[in-house]
Length: 394
Ligand SMILES: Nc1ncnc2c1ncn2[C@@H]1O[C@H](COP(=O)(O)OP(=O)(O)O)[C@@H](O)[C@H]1O
Ligand SMILES: CC(=O)OP(=O)(O)O
Ligand SMILES: [Mg+2]
Image (cartoon, rainbow, N blue to C red; front, side):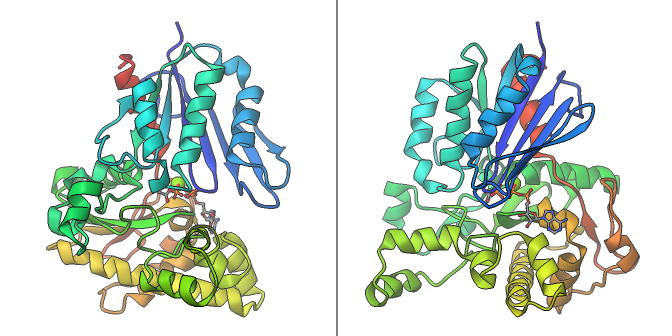
């Protein structure tokens, strides 16, 4: 019987696939990335024994990419022990990774609106897998689970307390699977025990958030009830004055639904630049002299620095500030500008270390200043491990 586990990580603009052959494997035998979904030039890159790029039709959706992957790799997916799905929002009902049956899927449907760019595509992945592979167990691994340790004074909004009691209105936090991996990996790279570490981790991808970790536990994070709060993101606004929504509805002839769509899909880097949600495109445009790209990047870096400084409120010391996610791992210029924008931080980056590439990077600061690190995330490995545990193959 096969021991393989397939992991499906649907992000807001991408899907990452990974096929792990055994519970002990740390490297997948198949890895694939569908990116720029919903844009002009989406693509699916497969890494098996060799690298192969499949082009998807312009504006291809998450569903198109999933079907293309499952069809292309059907021989390798014949006998699976389980499929692990990233599910972004677990709401009040799910506080840990869970085997999915009809009841769990119905409960997930009810909270879908709380993460509109994610939970519907997460569910779509689950439903498609149940259709195509009815004999295989599906497991959900939640972004919200790691933030269960956040204290009440941090997760409550200052709104009528009834809203929390009756409607579950509170801050949940996301990217928890990434924080769980990066915190453990940071401890390994520093040769420290993760229960002793105080960290600020900035997960900067298409969705962006940051987390304060005290003695190994999440104590504060920038995202809230939904993944819209906090940092400026690829297409999401991050923090805004909630009065803005009423103003646009009352004075600009928009419906609330239109405002929410704009805040989720057409704001952030994309809205500010008018060009793209993708930092690679913006850095290139800025280098070519485009003022709107510079404007978007400047706002992004300032707002990230401001939020990282705010997260330090909960920590007595900071053992390391850690960058991860697509931007955090790959954009040295953005790391440099965020640290420079945090003006009270006793820190400067080592420019050679900051410019270096490779997964085994760690510190990017010289000795004697506040340590800053780059630690690539690996949500897929965490999802595979939880899946193996729940399907009893560990
Ligand atoms: N080499 C790079 N330089 C700058 N930014 C990058 C680079 N590679 C990826 N990115 C950024 O990372 C984002 C994707 O991050 P990722 O964490 O993989 O996405 P998701 O949030 O969909 O999971 C892209 O939209 C782009 O902004
Ligand atoms: C929660 C979230 O924003 O996820 P992603 O970064 O994958 O879009
Ligand atoms: Mg992601």
